[in-house]
Amino acid sequence: MVRLKQVITTICLIWFACFVAQGQSRQERFEAIEKQKSAYITKQLKLTPAEAQRFFPLYNQYTKEIMDVKSQKNKRAADAGNSPRSNNFRGGQDIIEYDAKEVEIKKKYRGKFAEVLDQTRASRFFAIEQEFIKLLYKELDSRNRND
Image (cartoon, rainbow, N blue to C red; front, side, top):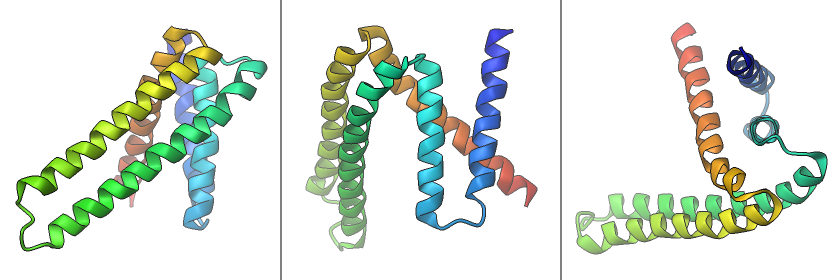
């Protein structure tokens, strides 16, 4: 029963985020989704107000570092795709290096998150983040089917 209540609440939050996102600029939609993501993380990790106050500045740093690496990776992949030598080994190796950077960032922040939370919740954060992304994709897929 509790699990069902969490699922329903999560779906409502995502639906609300998507509803609010209609008619907004891309940046406003991103910010609205980030707010919903923060609420989802807070609920799923059962953060106290004190923990949330310490956790979210770290989370914001983590997000910035991950987004920077992903941006670099996407730029590199686009550059490699436009190159006549796009199938060379070095290009693929660079992409893998970006993946390794992402893993290193996650390891670093898992330790920092564990200083604020316990080790279990710090590790669980990454699964919760993926759950939220999956829920967003489901909502987007649902919207695309209804259009």
